[in-house]
Image (cartoon, rainbow, N blue to C red; front, side, top):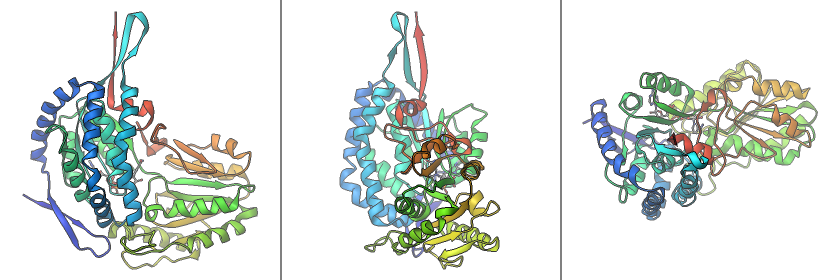
Length: 445
Ligand code: NAD
């Protein structure tokens, strides 16, 4: 049986390994998932909620282990990893209650009822950047809706997913939640298997493959894809708050976040002041290995990501960007805090998602130019505007699923986490999001 190794991105040491799920293993897994799904679907919403809550309680003693695995497998500093693990563990408490309310049958008057029925077997395919949270966000509504789940975690972070699923399975019935390990070969075999829904978080490119492979079975899809979020800074913005947000959002998780700020359009009249504040905040960041105190930017998750960010920075320099902080030449495994000005449309930094701690700034003369440029993208996940009273009018013109005014984007919890354009369709969070994991059935008469 082939094995999948997990590497520490700081020093490339092997941390551990798991058995790869071969394509031939998938059909028996789906059969087990179907067997487990029928009695689970027959339970009331309250009974499912109770079992899931109990299952999440088993994870509480594992929080520290889960946080350390997140850090070791993808480099995130331990404080952030703890925050992710803690949030995931607590999620069942509020999440399941919200979902139970959203999936309760609705009366259609004297003549009928609208129901939210299970779909069957759901594949949850997740990325490495928030390896617990991203799996959890889709797995909980799928299970609460009465489905069984096969989780295909990222091949970069198999160990944390394995510990998570094993913890939950101390309580959940056998076969209800299974894990399939491997890269896109395993993912593709799962997508093509006899399942009913794919809930995917990851890149646009992988999303397109999944959609194509799901087409023959007309399988239900939820697609949470990449982002290239713009930020507009208007002349009357609180510049200190805007600069602090710009840096924090660009550097969060070493920049490896779907809704991190990627392109900043700042009014030319206040650009110099904004840039000097950005520099002051950016210099406060501490780069280093995940287990050292005060570190808030860890190594990039893998050498390919590191190479990709360098390529984008080198392209920006070649096309005239000014480096206000940092350079385009960093040895593995870190990308130091980098601030560039003179971002232009031709640069890869403007066109593509950047998964590194980079603040990229362009100046604008008229607000219409900033709006046009913010919208000139195939992505539409989040967008942010900092400004005075007119910021709201600007926000109304932005093409994104989630927009923050003088703050970051919201989403999840009781609001949807939702993308526009090629950042995806289908979503989670909110009653409408929870219902994406269920089949609507109307009974009348
Ligand atoms: P990725 O698309 O490379 O991989 C994601 C998952 O899909 C992995 O488990 C991978 O093995 C699997 N996969 C890849 N190709 C597949 C295929 N053809 N069929 C089936 N499965 C396949 O993404 P990544 O590098 O792990 O994660 C980073 C991306 O995820 C970024 O684009 C980021 O913006 C996005 N993301 C989006 C959100 C959101 O909420 N919208 C959240 C987090 C990350």
